[in-house]
Length: 79
Length: 79
Image (cartoon, rainbow over all chains, first blue to last red; front, side, top):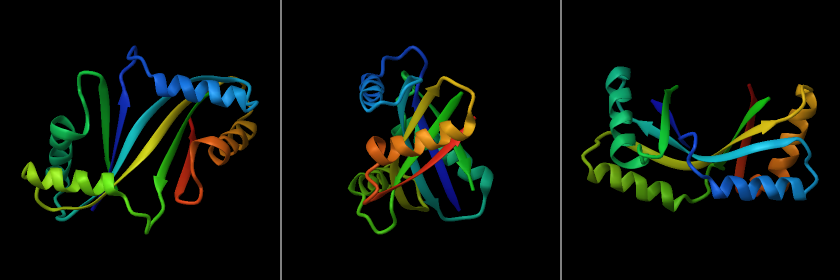
């Protein structure tokens, strides 16, 4: 089973890296670019076929290791 | 218009960060975790309503700035 976890900053949390990308894009001549926010993505291979257990495990992984839930949101999708 | 760009390492490119996460997850007691690969995600707000132009712009942004196409793949989705 393959899963993708996407971790993004919560709204209102400052994102200096995103701001830097914004400036770089407008410096390269891309007009009409508004806010840019950067996040992380984790592609995880899981053994087993129990989708419900996998989803529970993935959420636990996010809470314990992959995301800082004070400032970040995460979403889990299993394919 | 909002777009999400996902940048992932190509197959065969070493991902030490992913490996570290793998080990950390098994150290935390998560069994059955196979390969972990880390990537980046960019959430970009775009002005304008021309979807075709936006997609072309986003691909140009990836080629010029956001992705290293020697070792990374990217995908663009507009919502």
